[in-house]
Image 1 (cartoon, rainbow, N blue to C red):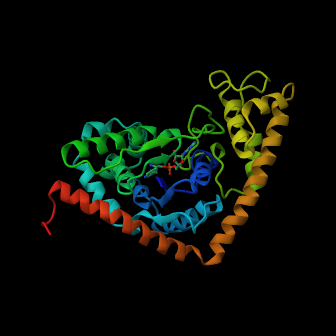
Image 2 (image 1 turned 90 degrees about the vertical axis):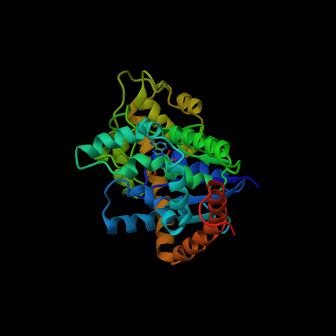
Length: 331
Ligand code: TYM
């Protein structure tokens, strides 16, 4: 069976963009692969975090993973900082990557620009993609389902794996990236030229998976739309409506062309009211499941078991990497 790896940062509560770009794919793929899902808390601390909030978000993120429909008996769900192999492999891969490569990452450039206005930029923000490559490569992942914003990091992961294999020993699997067919890049509701993000300062731009469902419907109804009145998918001319069509299509599993037909001749207002109802119902059901997991007491057991299983696999690869690079003693 092939292996799948993916991760989400507990830097805030995930948005419906994260659900559509990531979780939905995870659920669809979980039975076809030996699947590892990670709460990447070490990535979250590349920018300042409140200690208690980070802990709380980490726990909620575990419940959110499961509420999406992942089967804890089948998959491995764990917290990155609880498996030491990630940080060990990240160091080795930092020594394989080049500074120039890291400086070219668009996510680094965006975050560094924002961070620079507040305080200094951490070294971790720059070397973050080496840790992400480590996450993936120590499980020998064949496939990595992610939203489109992670494409560049995945390219670098492939480059680092190939370079390591060529320089040391051919032991790392070069992973394939998998983006969803619809909704690989959900945009902000109040600025459809910008990605929807859980760390956006403007709360009107995103819908968190734990937003009050009625308030979320209201955000959809007040989402920025485009000039004209036609409900048609056109990312250039109609980025606002196209984004809402992506959300609608993904949450209902109806094709965009089917929705276009259905809303032919209808108003933006009617379309947004209907989508608001779809989002409201989706969130209400989703949050019931999140609360079930948060209250069940099973989460800690699932995460303990997950960390053990993950470490068993990842430690073996870290040992091989260390041997290939000549670290430690020969035994
Ligand atoms: P993160 O936490 O920012 O996002 C988690 C997942 O959600 C996707 N995503 C989106 N998809 C569609 N539309 C959006 N607006 C949107 N925003 C986010 C992301 O592409 C991602 O799939 N670096 C990663 C976490 C990570 C990781 C890994 C992922 C660390 N190690 C190893 C895969 C494999 C990140 O910051 O994702």
